[in-house]
Length: 247
Image 1 (cartoon, rainbow, N blue to C red):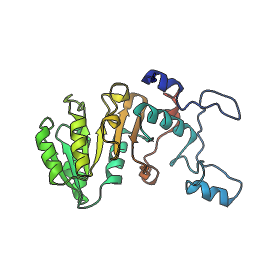
Image 2 (cartoon, rainbow, N blue to C red):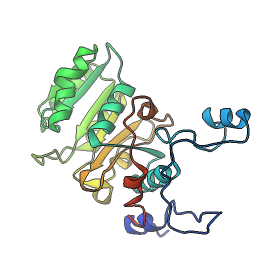
Image 3 (cartoon, one colour):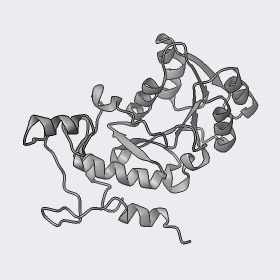
Image 4 (cartoon, rainbow, N blue to C red):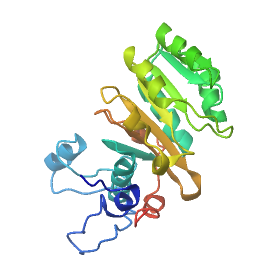
């Protein structure tokens, strides 16, 4: 069976014809709040019982169109976009880790990410293990000793070291850990870590293309990383619109 490539998916997937205007290019929805006929309908939307938007910090039609396209490119179930790459990374970590849980990462992670594992997360009671980037045996040993979240980056920024994502995510699956992969350098055009990670475990994938303001987290788990709206690191609909047609 013929499979669509990333170029075709970036153009055609998640493209909808606006029912009111018949426009094929998603418009920029710059408004903050959305109105409904009655409180009951508003409540149903707020509780995710029916589709809709309440407040643009949480969701926005333009942002949703961008996220649908990103999810398609990442071959993920869903995606959430952020104002910056570090916003995607920090929100994902704080959403998935709690005090006394264990996180395993690598020494060559992006500088601000490295600080999360060496200074920030430990302050909140998260036990962090930082391994030499190319020592796969040491990473696997740290996972076996106890791991709730495995955080990888490949290629690393800026040292360009490459990890065996399939091997390490398989080790994480054995202990029930969640695998997170920073895919900034490769982008979903060159690799889709979600395809390599076990489908039975959650996989979050923070990515950021700073030049166009595109930053997101895509995952194969059913749970949505909902902290974005709660800690006010959402994105601008205008920035999300730029790469949509086609990408």
